[in-house]
Length: 269
Image 1 (tube, rainbow, N blue to C red):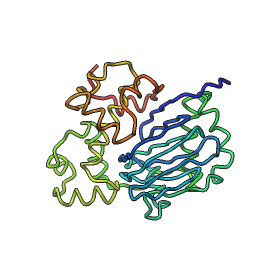
Image 2 (cartoon, rainbow, N blue to C red):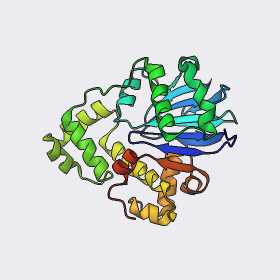
Image 3 (cartoon, rainbow, N blue to C red):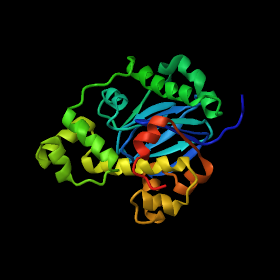
Image 4 (tube, helix red, strand yellow):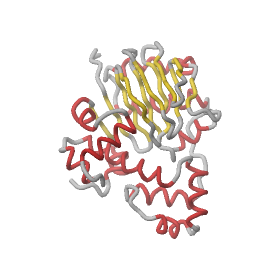
């Protein structure tokens, strides 16, 4: 087994897993729900927007919840779940209305055996994907299932993802056979975030997909719909606390076939 500790980002269709030995981020918020787990079992620090600080070894953070994160060498698994995913809908009831919910890491049990190998790059993509599922099911205590979602909202979700968010509300309303107001309400009710926020999320998520290949940052920005690389950089700092240049140069990014198909369509090459 290699003993290298590095930054890695593993992309799948409805989630991604960021693994890092250490991170200190400013205030960030994103549309995905985030499950955080310490690799070593030593605590990390989460600070909410109101200044409340939590020391924990695992936590759930809801979509668009602002937080600062300080992981000082204990290693971190950061599992980000698309707000429309079945995994997030299963976890949402465990949030208890809290934006930041500490989790008793003992619930992971033997799943923790894979934390160190994951950080050292010793797990295959398939085993990493399995690890991501086990992190969720350890908390929900039930296998991942596909909770029902209104088929009209499902059509809208697919359209937003296909067009990377760049599709007018009136077209989405026609697709769903709903008025704009009714669609806006039903979408937020079912997905947990607004159409506008989910559309921006798809733009950012599709941009992340491009880091699986070495491309100039300006090309990545323009292909993703950003006005320039600086605009993309500001968005990434606000979402992830990481710059695109850091992601491009210091993070090993991989994606499976399903993620490449779902999030790579329509991109300029």
